[in-house]
Length: 239
Image (cartoon, rainbow, N blue to C red; front, side):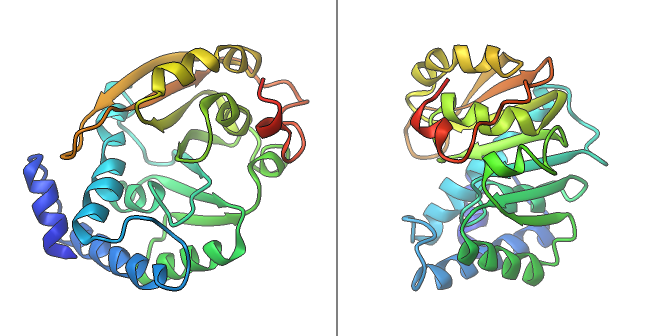
């Protein structure tokens, strides 16, 4: 696993510190081992995990630089629908100064994530086993500087999960694929209704061809108390 990570990152001119490589390698092995008995990811080749999960997560770092978010000490990020931990666990490895919360509703996946956090000694990570709609109406509301989400839902739905969690002036960074422009156009009403505005779209490329970008939405005003709506409603009736 470690050599696969080195090969993939080196092809993009990225050289990771030894400690980060070791943690990513251990994490990758844990994903592969657990995936044999639990559906964590459809990607089962070491080089594909290194590229489509680890290198993909890395793409947030230049976006943060572009947004002039450089001093991450004390900043808080929450990842919605973390699943097997992508992109949040790699981000916790790349950015140890950032406090990261993984929000995942399935208990068995939360148990796996807890095992990963313990095995990798990730002191900057917290696991919350809850739905975004519930967490966004309770303890998590207006509590984070950044929100991430990847492969969870369309942007119009994600905005209702994400924006209530953000502090005003915080940013939601959504990892998107070929339909990013279509989803952004579809989400305009949701973005405005929930107190956000489009900050920008940041395209990037992995080694394998395919359109990818990180869509960034800034929260510019408080989200109305009635949002997020109750569990299941944002998905069934997007704004």
